[in-house]
Length: 292
Image (tube, rainbow, N blue to C red; front, side, top):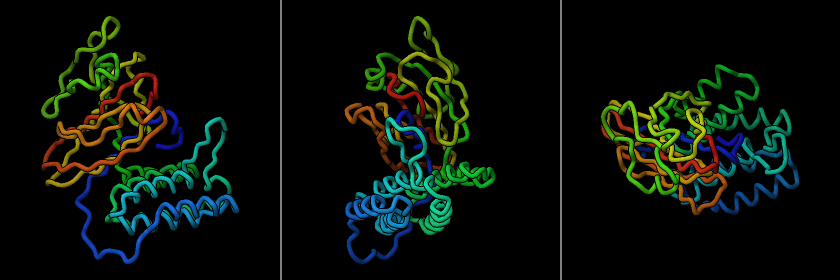
């Protein structure tokens, strides 16, 4: 998630059917200019949320636009998750006035309800609403939005599996794509020559990579996805580490080391069969960020 964005990896898995086709929207959405306009409006009035909310609506109405998801993410960052390096406190618009908080929360709920053809945007909005519910102490509502965001309640964490971390990431995964998970793996000698899978409970979508070991090396975050019928699984991964997400043994999302040490969000989609499919997020833990 974005609350401590500088050192966070987010795995948001939204399992659903393919978006339904609809009539194309008229006109062209210049989402870049919409974001620029939103920032200019904020510069004149730091409490105004409407331009960013409108940008989210336009982006969802134009899912074919290559900047649609980025526009949703950037707008939610400004509204809910903004973090300013070197400054303490909450800097997003919803934290500047109670009116902005109430207005933004209600509007995002309406947008979420109407965004059934945009599963990735829907997952991001649900994550934002989960955070807002926690902000005001609405525990029941927070639990509802957490489920809607697709966040796993727990994951299996394995590691360190190899070192140096980047070199280990280039090798084939030690985690089997199917079948039972072994009860032990070859780790990093001498202090972790053998490592065992451990269940780790998530904080919404966040997992601490160092929960089971303080050593650097490749970590594997494992989630088994169960489906009653074939369909699509939509994923969003935010990380400041080099990482690869494999679903059913196939690479779906890659976050290269060359993108730098700041958090980067990558999106992906995978076609899965009925039954159980394994998702493995392989992370090169080189002290770039300890949470996933």
